Image 1 (cartoon, rainbow, N blue to C red):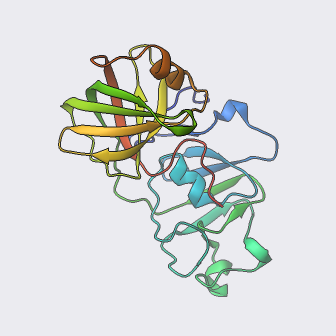
Image 2 (tube, rainbow, N blue to C red; image 1 turned 180 degrees about the vertical axis):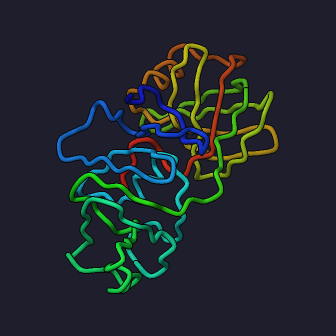
Amino acid sequence: MLASRHSTWEGREENCQYNGRSHLSEKPPQAFRVRIEPGGVEILVSPDENVLAAALAAGIPLAHSCRGGRCGRCASCKSKLLSGSIEYPAGAPPPGITPAEIARGEVLLCQARPRSDLRIEAWRLAVRTAAAASCEILAIDALPLGALRLRVRILAGSVAVRPGQFVDVRNHAGDTERLAVTACGAEELELEAADDGSVLRQWLGEHAVPGLSLRIAGPFDRPRGDQAS
């Protein structure tokens, strides 16, 4: 059954299908299904996107170091290709993998682009499930280019984040969007909501006031929809 909700991957969920950027039922042309074992998690990856970037954007904690797909030397993301075909940039294997490893079916996910549906056996980091917290709005301020600065106070729970990371913010109606963390303290966070046309951004601009409650979850290293090359 195809997933129909946005949520982070958790190790206890078996045979789930997930894509933080688009549902699998909305598979766009030229996107390939990539199944990551163990666990059977499925994501969609475009032909010009490396598998590691897509997995991290979907909240799947794969081992990695450089993760930009540019150096190809650290080999932290080396995985086993169980089925399907991939291609590396420039059509040549990167420095971080040897001909013998390629012959054994190993791939570097930080540079591997899918050329078909894939099934991959990958090393996973210790599962870091998204922490959650309840908070209240302290202030909402306008920023250039239509963005908003949202300052919140944590009321219950905790989310260990740092500036530059992201959290999912949900209002009482269930509208959810991933916002950037711009500052954080012991009990307060500053978040930035871009003028992206999302339902939550519209609610923040038109209806939200100090004192209203929100639910946040995270941290995440990438915004929804980010596709690293």
